[in-house]
Image (cartoon, rainbow, N blue to C red):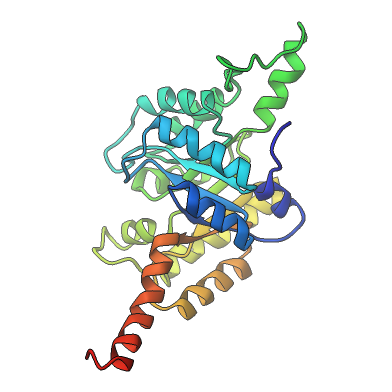
Length: 269
């Protein structure tokens, strides 16, 4: 039986879907227990390989939380034909939601074409019960979500063309690195950048017209209260799904406040 799709069900109900980054089954189970809707499994800056991702997808599905895989790319390096190859393998091991940090339209156009392919866990569960391949293949494509993850100059240059792509169903703002690029490759992100929020507003308006689901992350703030305020701001801007950074980062922020107080209580400082 196909696992419940908490991410899409939440968004289609008109509510904002909340998620965090996590790369281990225990945290995925905890996040599901806490009522989060989705987990971002990261291949871009971690040691996660395809086998790890396959097991994380299974763990998330068993726990009742939607897995979203951020595949490995380097969008600041330029066009990468390997994205299509790696995407095919991710779909083959069960990934239905794939974030692609991209250098431009060509990578997204190719990815959206690959999303029509039928190889989905196909080497251990043949997906067709009879010769009627057409309807099942269409169903697979409809249940696959290629999510452009915008954070490079090339992605900015092709922003309108990507949002206008007829097959696009979801789009994501990487608020940290996108704000840095918009700031002239600044060393420091600017979550409050007017340019950044102009792009957000433009995308949300177009998404509403075309039925595209828009998401973003909170970038980095160093108190839980400010993180909460950023979630609210993204929600108010019209985001359908929000990544509240990583589970580890939230733990780090909480402990930065908690541990000094404990040490003071114990006379350690």
